[in-house]
Length: 206
Image (cartoon, rainbow, N blue to C red):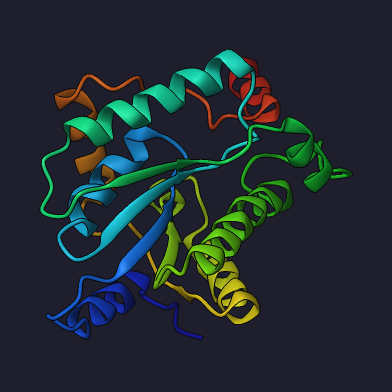
């Protein structure tokens, strides 16, 4: 079976957008560095609200630092359409419940998939509640994240909530490299682990 090119799917969606109305997009973001290129790219075509929902991040000081960097980037990034911001609840218990029984699985496997779904589900639910045209996530920009799984979850949640999922593989077209360049340009804090205690332990173990 041929792998789906989600970047091409995204380009097809953009080509099909009408010119009369700028569609609204609720974009889940994991951090400012990962969102930098995505916002630069998509704000040309969508009215974006960044949804910062990441109960997986530990400790709380790390979470707060990442939230502030996200807000700072949004305030400084020159874009065609203004970008809004919404912060979800920071309740780490939601993350630990979602990954219960998967604690010892290495990063990149089923535990991460459960974490993707937790955060994307919140985005889909909020997008439905607030009447957004689309929802998506910045997660696919990372070379360490499984774009195929992210888009499978997006399609599943689209069917559940009735809000269109914007397909993505943002690492394509040098998106990840551009996020590194933008992080340097804006002096963004760039963490060295995904966010959760499990990824932190793996990083410290080398």
